[in-house]
Length: 273
Image 1: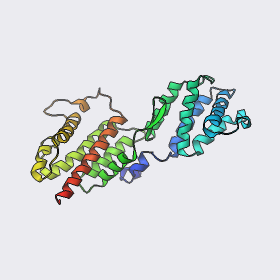
Image 2: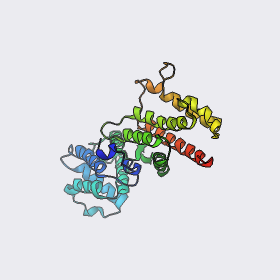
Image 3: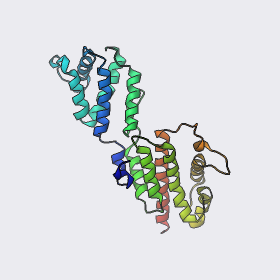
Image 4: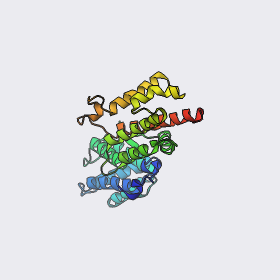
C-alpha cells in the first residue's frame, strides 16, 4: 500500500476512475492487446481492426492505412487518445470480433473477460455487460462515499476510508474486510448516539435520541449487519469463507453504508446535535 493510501490522502474520485483513464489502466489494456497481436505475424488482425475503426469510429479514409503500422496505430489509440475514445475503441473491437470478419487470434468472450479483469484490477468505473461498456460506479455514488468519509461523525470517516482502501488495493483487494469496515462505520455512529454496544441493539434505540427511522429502512440495515457479523456463535454469510465476495458486493456495501452515515448526519443536524 502506498504512503498516500496509508495516511488516507487519496480522493475517492482518484481511486475510482470514472472521468479519466490513468497510465496503469492504459498500459494494462495495451499489454493485453500486445499479447494477442504477438500471435499474428502477418499483422492481418491489427490491419483489419484498424480498417474497422477507421470506418466505424474515426470516419477516416481507409485507403490511407499502412498495414504494417496498424499495431502502432492501436497502441497510440490506447495510450494517447481521450479516455472515452479508448472505451469506444474497446466496444468497437468487440463489434469487430462479433462480426466474424476477422482473423481468429482473439476470441470475443475471452477479450471481454480480460478487459473486465483489467477494469476491476485498475478500479475503472466501467465493465463490459452484454458486449456494451456500462458504468457501474456513477458520480452520485462517488459523492456519497466522499460525503460519508468527510462527515463529522465518530470514527465513521476512518472506517469508510479503510473500506475504500481495502476495496481499491490494486494488488490485493480485500473485499471481505472492506465490507466489515463499511458496516463498522454505521455501527460507530449508532453506538456513539445511543451508547449501545452493537449496531443490532443501537438501531431500535435511535428513536429515544430523537432520530426516527422508518421501520423498513431500519430493518434493512439490520439485515445487512446480520450478513456481516456473527451472533451468539452462529456463523453468518460473510463469516463463511466459501461464500465468494467480489468487487460488486464490497462496492454496494460501501455506497450503502456511506449513504446511511450521511442520512444519520442529516438527522442529527435537524435535531441540532
